[in-house]
Structure formats: C-alpha cells, structure tokens
Image (cartoon, rainbow, N blue to C red; front, side, top):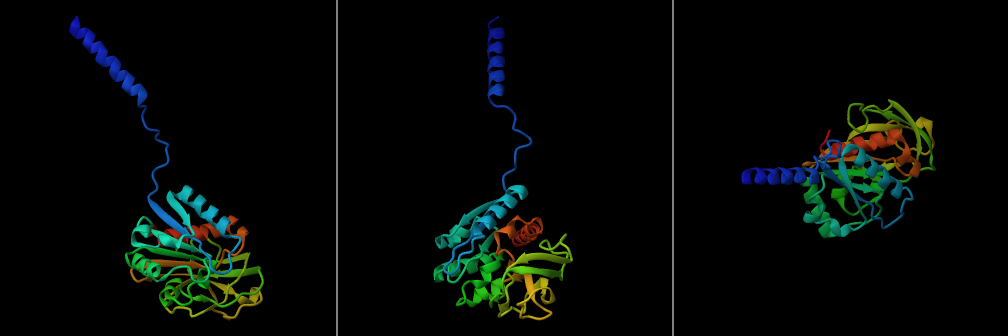
Length: 249
C-alpha cells in the first residue's frame, strides 16, 4: 500500500512538471543564422533616406532570418566589435568616418573572409584611404538632378540581379564615378540615353561586386530617395547583395 502511494506521488509530480513545461512551439522563429551591421555615420551630407534604408534592411532580416544591428559609432570598428557580423553595410556614409586604428580593424575584418555592402553615398566616403576606394570600387564624381532612368542588367544570375527586369526603369539620383577599379564585375549599367547628366557614355556602371582580399564586396548606387527602400524590386536587389556579402549565395 505504501509503495502504491509513493507511485501515485511520483506520477502526480511528473504530470505537474509536464504541465509547467509545455512542448516548444514548432512554429517559433528560429534563431538568426547570421548577423549584419548597418553603419551610417556621416561627416558630410546626411541623406534623409537613411532611416528608411535601416527599416528596409531590418524588415529583410526578419523575413530572411538574419539579425540586423545599426550604429553610427565608429568605435565599434575593432576586431572584437566586428567579430559577430558576417557583413557590414556602409549606408550612405559620407567623408571621413573611421580613424586609422578603425580602418586597420576593418581591413583585417574583410581579409578574414567577411563581407561589405556599399549603398549610394558609400562611394562619397574616405577619399584619403586608398584601400577603401578599392573595396567600394569607385569614388563619387557628381550627379544630375533626381530623375527617371533605365538600368540595363549585364548579369542576371547574381543574387543581386536575379529576377530583376533586364531593362529596369526607376527614379533615383544617378551617380557619376571616378577611379573605377578594373577588378569589378559589373552587374548593371545606366542607359545614358534615357536621362540627362551621365558622363560615362555606353559603359556607366551602377551596381557591381568583387571578391576582395579574401572577402566579398557589393555596391549599388541606388538609394538616394526614401522611396527607393519601399520599392519591392530595389529591396530584392539589396537583399541579394547582402546575401552575397554574407556568403549566403
């Protein structure tokens, strides 16, 4: 009889423990598999579109299971500070944004096999740091007024361009460039016959990528306007570039 009472006590305890610890919800969102850092410090012009760009990339992270952190604090550019991230986005950064120690830390980060994404004014950044110029692929060299133009895809298989129209018409501020690296693989060019103010003629690159010193770099010149980051096709383009930079292609 005593043994039976003990058995009942253990049975009740086990039932209570199970009730207090229900099985995990199989529909719960999995832990993010990767992390992205958005860096948007500016020492020159600050684009009004930066907050919209941050929101767009945060939404993409939620939809595609990668964590998105944001900062304007260059002090995060240390070996330890950058270590958690598979890629860093320079979102319309301008002028000098990192000191020499921070620059060296970022160089080591890329050489460790990580990724870089440059958006719009990332080419208007760090003119005195030649390594960065080679990483981003070119420097800004002026622009005409915001207007509609047609983008011509050169490569439709890269994650940043797969599924986009071969001729893609949209409105933005269209950059001209100088010091274009010869090592870039161009993804898309601007058809200068469709707008005014281009200076490159028939070969006007507007988005590109490269493998760089052990890491990966992607740049898109779009993103001057807040509306850009609400365009489904531009978000698709940006997502593909991010996934490439994070090594998720």
